[in-house]
Length: 248
Image (cartoon, rainbow, N blue to C red; front, side, top):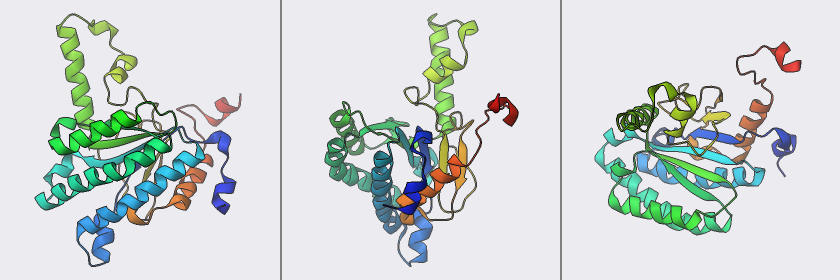
């Protein structure tokens, strides 16, 4: 067993961890390879971290796989990413199901090509009754898109007379977000040394602990996850209160 794993307090685990999987392209470039080579090797990290999260008993794991801005990347890379997504889901869905992991997707599914959407819908259906780790893939997702979408849908309900403006509060807004079924993340991890959240879960990360590491995503493994969790467990979560208020 990992020495780091033994140090983790299982009674103080974050229920929900969100990860910005950054650095595939730079990792590949450092090795003199094409960007898609980095994405391909990033899949092994996904497999390893999903397994590690499930073993720990984490309830929700959200992975930022593809943002709405990523559609602006070179066409060959976008096509390659979509093909990699489909082939990975095809290969992994049996393992997810066997390990009681339920797959969810958040984002604008309408922007995905039909073959990718069909593969995803099949995987969602196969794992829908599983009760272990909830694996949430953020695909064609951005926080601003999500908030704009929520506002439009709320306005539509008001227009139809189904919702009073006076009744709109935080609970109503959350109901219209992609993540309405999930608790907010307590820990957000970003790999590859960038210090920003890149339009990811803008509303939901309000009180998340942010953890940044220089490790490129294709090199990120369970021990790196354990380091992030130990760092999280060493922090004091005050939610706007003072330390003294938490003690009393």
